[in-house]
Length: 116
Length: 112
Image 1 (cartoon, chains in turn orange, blue):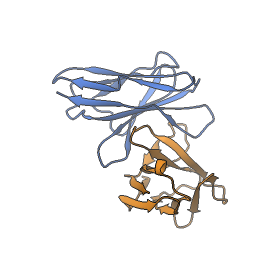
Image 2: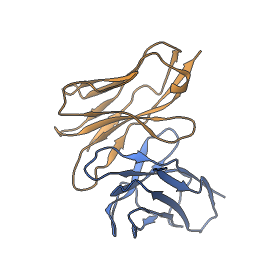
Image 3: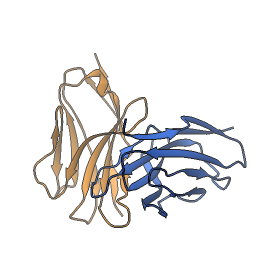
């Protein structure tokens, strides 16, 4: 069974600085997707970034980028130029596409606090 | 506006009572999902549906039931058999051929 581990329960960063959130996963699959979701105090889950395992190039979305190391099964999220609005819980998630439903498997989350 | 709506935002359940959480989407997505979130944990899958009139159990389906009579709607019933229903419930949907699940705003269920 696939598992996702986020080893940092809490992180903090000063506004405008850079922070990296860690995520590791365990799978024997070769084709899968990885996601980072953000959950602000409103509690709605918002997609931050997505990575397809067969693509070697790391995904980027504006200030957000990932470091995808397939052999090491590592998928870290880097947030550059941190803003106060980045304060939230961040969840790493794994998905193996299949006809059975494409279930997302989530880590336990990292609480990020951005302070002025 | 296109999106996923969940109602109510807060729901209170008395002992032995069944309650139903609503999830509606107007994104024309085929697949829909229900997740449960407990404090300090990630989301866990309760039920999912790939098409109308078909649904499958997730990892923690006991004490819950669903229906999918319309493409736009995927209600979740928390039955009296669910002994620890207090949690935050999130509905999600995914378009055909897509990999990303999009989430609604959630429903907070509390037991009186």
